[in-house]
Image 1 (cartoon, helix red, strand yellow):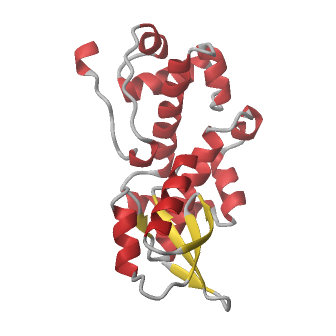
Image 2 (cartoon, helix red, strand yellow; image 1 turned 60 degrees about the vertical axis):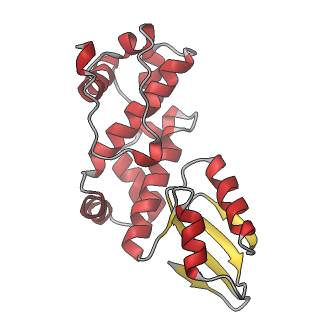
Length: 206
């Protein structure tokens, strides 16, 4: 949960931070309970140890905003894995994502992919490969809603080698093809921090 150093700094490992807004919320909320915040990045905050502020105070203020403290090394690895995947899918460099995500995760996290995958599945009850697909589909929904790229460009941006493969995965998750999702404005997105083993049926649209 917490790392310390000789300067009496605390490193808080925090679950469910997935966007720049999360950084601001965590910083503001930690300051409201009297902590001096040195740094906040996705998944982590560094604060000065402050007398009178308990771990329960920290946990409560984070929990009130949908975050939580991470207590063990395996949970840290799972959260880091999520952040790496999300950051990869939201960058504007499709060349990076065309390499296999398994190789990318192993390189960035400096862990064997088999261990990363097994740890993720044990914690989240969903295969890591499935989680990646779900995140790709949510990113695709966002790009379709922006209406700035065609389907082929979106497929390439997300690392798909063909539009057909992209469309097939999108329809398997949502029940409809990407063009129908865009043209009929059937916008139904999930918060990226809450994506789990979900399958949107959209049965009324079939």
